[in-house]
Image 1 (cartoon, rainbow, N blue to C red):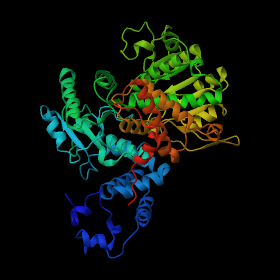
Image 2: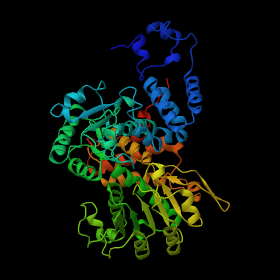
Image 3: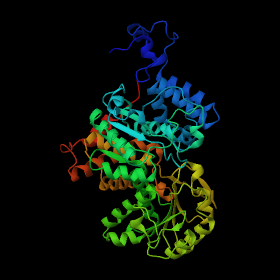
Image 4: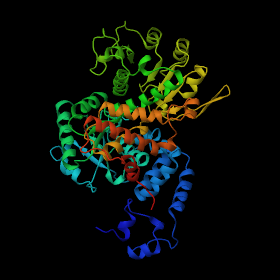
Length: 535
């Protein structure tokens, strides 16, 4: 159906606003509906940037960009692409955390699909109402564990929207192929249930067999309605996140970014760190603060990477220990979660500080969501053991980071190899400028998705995640390493994503996951297929 007149101006995918030429205005019935001056896309971008930068609060900038995305999609994505370092913290972490907390009060217009308990038995029909029929990429959340903020119910829709925005900007996946979904099965957040503006189900969460049955129907509906789609699970609580991934990873094309994406980007940072400390991954010992799905996901992928360097699984697992709110996770503990049990240490029970002294890790990884849990005494203890210890404070948003970059560098007297999940500014310390690398999953999941979709891969396995990590680590220039930065600049992210896509596709081919061999010019094909938002 050909759009004309106001329908064209109100469709963000095709709207050019004041950039419609005089001939286009005549052809599409737009004459008289726009000011007479024809703008270039560059002028539209500058106008938008001027308005954006006049705002002082990040949440106001987020709302401005969201409105622009719903008004003129191509201007929105050009602004993101050409100002990625400025825009990334606005469209995703850390600002998206506040955006989710205020999602209902700031709601203007719908974006994506909302599937609730009342849709059971009819989920496929509900998905079929989505106007775009060639959906290739779905990000779904049930809102129970949004970043480090907890249960935000349907307010968590900001996460699937934001993730797909990054897929488009960072990898070049066409927005027309993307669908954010909120599975709303209630919330345990009493403040939301009593909030008169809350737009989600005002009941406790569906649990147990009923939850499993609902998700089974949902996953089958995705396969039926959008058979070519990659399904990404996002911000589910740990038990459900692990169970869904284990249940469906061998049944349909799916992926959990909190578990697998976080693991891959962390592994990439650790591989880059070996260029500073001179050690192999399998030579190091790792201590985790936090034992949720993200932490143990990193642990599982680390074990696989260490095995590839020649050590046994048993030896690899012995080089990792985990701490939760009760202290070191040990074999003698009465109750152990299934995902933590394989990492339980053969040590006496003790707190994290004592565990650090006893275990003597090369790397301290924070994935706890608890700000300040990495203390000055812990950092100094690390430095007393190792010349160049690594400290990864991975929790999001920034306010939840286990320590800051400034603290890590100052407490370690400049010895720490630091990375974080949220962005930190460069740190000047004793005449040296340190550039903290941000282990943002946006370095991994967009390229992974791009490679899977363009190659036609039917599954995602650990070898593909390791290939993505190795490729990302190889993209870090020596000048970045010399400044202590373990990740490439965000300005390179489209090219990095293209390289990761090729690496992932080649690994999928070796695993037998492709319907046909990759073309010799597959790398050129990837770059040619990346979405270009220019008019």
